[in-house]
Image (cartoon, each protein chain N blue to C red):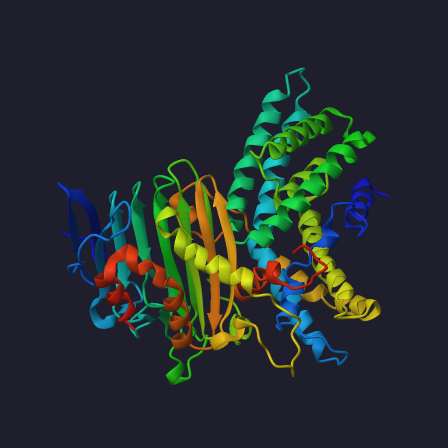
Length: 276
Length: 297
C-alpha cells in the first residue's frame, strides 16, 4: 500500500483533530434566517444541496487558489532540500518557505477582513491543523528526514508568529503547506480540500437536523460529479498578488455574496450550536 | 492629448480654504459644485463634492474610466453620481470587449472620503469590471464606501441577465493591504441571486465616521435572529422593508470600523434603508452636501 494513500485517508478522517466540527460554513445562520429550509420532504434537500454546491463553488474560486499556491511554493523549495546532498545549512530554505507562506497568508487574511465570522473559522481551523502538524505528524518517523525537519522548523516558527499575532495561519494556506510537507500530491491535496469542505457542511447539516445521516451519505455520494467538474474547471487557479493588475485580477474571488451576507449574521443568532 | 475616460480630483486646504480641482476627458465628466461651509465637527472638516458622470448616461463596452482622487487633510470629499451607472453592450462591441471603471483614491491624515454612487445596473449581456483602490494614509483617515448594484433593467424583465459583474475593493495603508473584497458574478449566478434585486457592500472606516459605524453596530447587536418559522409572524427588524443585512467588525492594523452587507428585493427599499442609516454623516459633511446625496435618488 503506498504511503500517500495512507496519509490521504488519515487526513480525510472526520476524526481529524482540527476543531472543524464547530464550524458550519454559514449553514446554521442560513438555516435560522430561512435561506435553507428544514423539512422531511425530498424537496427540502434541494435548498441544502444548493447551499453546499454554491459554497463549494465559492471555496474553489476563493480558497483553493491559496491552498494550491501555498502547496507549490512550499513543495518547490523543499524539493531543493531533498536533492541537495551537501551539508548546507537549511535555515535559508526554512526562511524562504516561511516568507512565502506569510505573504500568502496575509493576503488571504485581507480577503477575509470584512467577514469576521469566516475569518474566525479559518484561523481556528488553520491553527488546529498547524498544531496537529507540530505536535502529531512532526514526531512521526516520516518527518524525521532532512526535508521533514525543515517543514517542522517552518511550522514551529509559524506557530510562534501566530501566537505573537504576527501571522494568522489560515486554513487553506496551512492545508496546502501541511500536504506539501507530508508529501501528498497536489492533485490529491486539491481533491481532499474540496472533499473535506463538503463533508464538513454535510456533517453540520446532520447535527442541525436538516438531513438524517443515511440520507446525507446518499447526497454526499451524489456530490461527486459536481465537485469533480468544479475541480476540472478551477483547479488550475493560483492566487497572484504581486502587481496592481493582480490586485485587480480574478485569481481569487468570492462568488456567493448572499451566502457571505448570511454568514455574517451568525453572531446575531439567538441560540446556536456552531461557532461559525 | 488627454486619455479618454481619465479624470482627476484633488482637494486640499490652502491658506485655510478648500481648493478643489477636477479634470476629465470624454466619455467621463466630472463636475464639482459648491459644497457649503465647513462642518461643525471638531476639528472642522471642509466639505467638497464631485459628481462622476458619463456622457450618454452610461458606460459602453470598450470604455475605460479611470479616476485618480486625492483628499487632503481636513477635507471631507463626497463623490456622487447622477443616476444609476448603466453598463451596456452596444451592437458594435466585439465579443470579448469588456468595460472597466477604475478609481484610485488617496485619503490623507484627518481626511474623509465618502464614495456614495448610485447603484450599477448592468444591461443584458454586459460585462463590467469595477476596481477601486483606496489608501488610508493614517489611522486618522476615514472612509465611507458604498459599492452596490442591481439585478438589471427589471422593468424590461432583465434580472441577473448580464454576462459579468466583477467588483474589487482594495483598502490599504502605506505599509500593507488591509482588505480586499472581490466579488465575481459570472457563471450561472442567476439562480443564486434570484431572491434579491439589489446588493450592497458598505465600508465605514476611521474616526470621522465612528458614529455611523456605531449606528450599524448597535442595530446589529440589538436584533437577535430567532429560528425562522415559515408561517409564524416575524418580528425581527431584519424583515424591515425586506432587507437582509449583516455587519462585520473590522480592526486591522489601526484601521477600525465595520463592513455592512445588505440585500433587498428592490433598489428603492435598499436605497431608503441605506440613507436612513447614513444620516449621522450629515453633520460631518454639512447640510448642503448631505442634501445633494439624499436628494439624488
